[in-house]
Image (tube, rainbow over all chains, first blue to last red; front, side):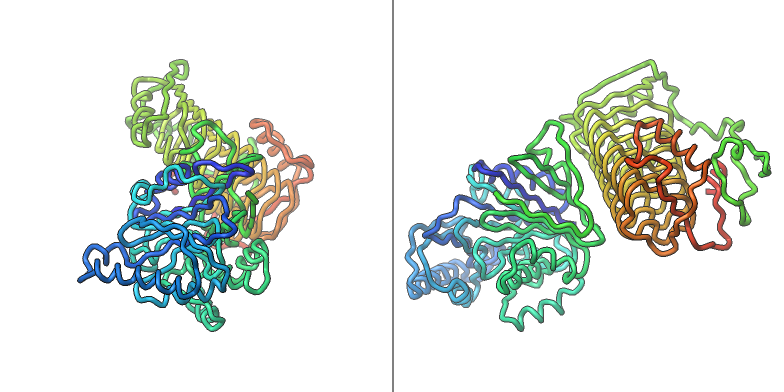
Length: 311
Length: 281
């Protein structure tokens, strides 16, 4: 089933970590397997923020000699960043298998991402000037507590609660997906894509990489490919309505915008609240109510509808 | 059971105007058979006995239980404050009742009801009043998709916009939308009337067997088997009376509405209203 949620403040920064946690916790019944957040803080023009993991949660708990392997993988990441000329400004472990790192780098992002992910067991969750992508197993409260998301100041974010249907219960298959190799682009999705394998093969032939077998990752890569060809976000999303087959509602966020798209069957839910300075959306109104307990006017977007808001 | 003939009261009242055909339509529901109007164990409620409660800190089972307990104690008018868009509220009510929700409902609100008059001050989520048999449900704001799915009787009204697949599998009754409706509205409609004051999305009335859809605005496209029909004076009179009850009207007036019916005759199928053949259903 899965649940998705998003919010965007216009012209101000607030505690979006707590807001999105409340919204996703209200959607827990739609998917208890994993929860993910793509949070957008103030953009740091001179620095890249990278979130990455060196093992899956289950592997970190049960894997043979895994502690030594995780240390080796982390050391390899450090070495390769140094080799590429990245200057590490700040780093902190979010868990023993996931890390947050800030560094200065003005080279080719795709090359950096490919080189880091070439290390066995390492996956970049997000890379950008404003985006911080956190995803792990468990409900929103558990993940937010684990990664200390309460108090995260930012302008907008999207999130996902997952009920695994098409692929495994692991971090790799959890949402959001970073739209590799574009900084600050992330996607969450509720639905099923029926032309996944054909579209995936076509995108792989164009040089894109997939980290999972989850159909939702296709949307992130598709959007990345469209942007790579010179399309703007809204045009890419409008084209996706025709080219992605299946039932879907998805959200895309960039460093300064948030968009939603719904397939022509309108088979997956979405409820919107829109005011002059704040927009919230979710699979169910209860999620919006978790941050707006008083009466508000909400509505459903229609079939084939695409909307994009700026922060 | 009363026999069907041209003098039947339902014709004089304008309840149905269709040409009757088929095999099973000769059985009519008789309003004088009182036992069929009240469910066994239905509470005897008094509309003048009123109760209110705050649902802010209650979950769905607790809210529905509270409503049920108030009905059993004879309360005929119940006001629920702060429903908070919770799912499945006000479901399975099979007796007369005035029920007011002072806020929004989530999914499956007011489903499986037969008799109550419900008013929702806010918005409702997907599948509001699914399988409703009788009574009235009035939504003051917007509604989600599959509004009135498989409804069999009564009046279901949304004063704002509704999502997609409105009245999917509608088997009777009346659905009224003050604003616009999304794609596939009236999909596989079998009986009853749907009135959309605003625009309708793609594939309106797709695969409909019977029933009538009135649209005040633009129709994006008609579905398979749905065709435009002539708006009669009787239609106009019915629309004016019905819409007047709920205070909604199309921007261009009732006389400019478009009437959509099934363009394909299905043999071995009849088109009586559920109230007329309740036992057959």
